[in-house]
Image (cartoon, rainbow, N blue to C red; front, top):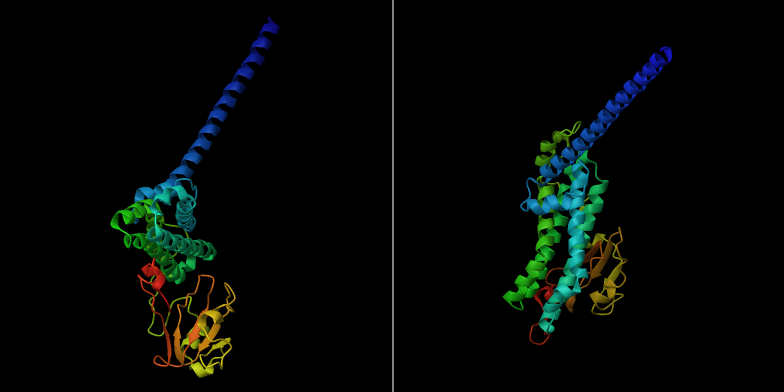
Length: 329
């Protein structure tokens, strides 16, 4: 009898322990599920808040749905990256645009598209990289830069469509359809940056004082954008005779080169230093093109009526020629 009581007692202890373990296990799983649900809820709320001011909300939320972050800066960078990937997809999918490459006019338009889409990617990538290095507490100081780059990306996308509009309306509509998602995502990114103050207020980020972020900073009459530092302003205010050029171009042979295009060959790619080219008096009949790798290039002439750059491209003689290809400095 005593043995039976002992067995029952031991069994009861095991039973209680099993019940306690089960309750603890269920509670632990429930807490984990609740925590995970809370994270998902916070992430979803952050995405909805960031996408709220955008024009294409569905495209915005879809582009951010894989992000588990609640950090508005990272969500906006994800938006930049989504736009970059979409444009790259268009460039890589040659079969999609092959139908728009039937004759010389279409080939010329496609050439323009490839060039400007590459420029769009560069502007978006620059925005992505720079935003990653900005402190959110001082983000207002850099908003103008971001808006300029994103506006540039959106403009170049439209330039691609416009190049086909010069061929015919149907071709332009096809290209517009191909670029639809790219343009929506880029426009969303621009709106996010433009409305960032509203987005941050909606997220109620602890420790972030909107009044100190620089959103409300107004430019003074002698102020300028963040990218135009004091050294660059001094260059614009200086007299041409006070500046030492890296290269001199002259029609009369007194300079190193006789054409501007040859002088540009000396410009180091993506240089952080200013490269000054002095173009002496004369009429230079050439199309001067500066690819995106040529940064910080400054031209100095001898006067608006003395140093003249001109050309005479036309659609008949230089067929096929698109408006985009007629640009010069």
